[in-house]
Length: 167
Image (cartoon, rainbow, N blue to C red; front, side):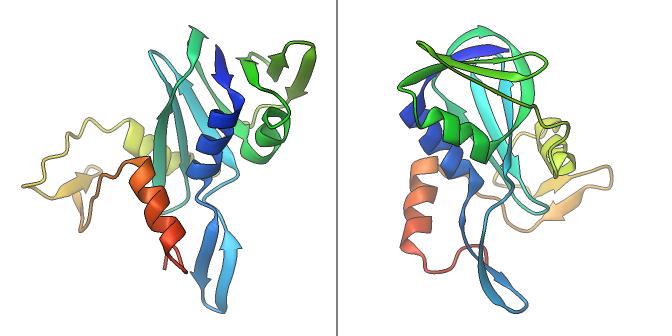
């Protein structure tokens, strides 16, 4: 897999899909995020996917695509390297190679996303949303009581307006 991105925009998208914020726990609130791994899927477009046991976030980003593929990469390390570059070519083979002019970085691939099961449930689903019927998943057709579609911009604005997220 190989693609080129504007680093400033790509870092912004990576930070967005990590959903960092304050989360309610049994002992109060704590700063957290969905997962520190991103599932990057490149075909006709570059899609970033992140999840925890209850939430999946997917975002399509602008990129110049050279070859298709899929990889799971640690978000924190990727952001650390990309913040120092204006544009970067990301190549994933046995490892992740990031190049920008004379700058180069190499980092490992994550073997499996911590919540790959919920990502797979969403990405392998052939379900087409029909707002007149309840959304279901699985063989037994378990109903989800709520399903929403928001633009990333609307979600980001809503989150930044809240004191507590994911209560």
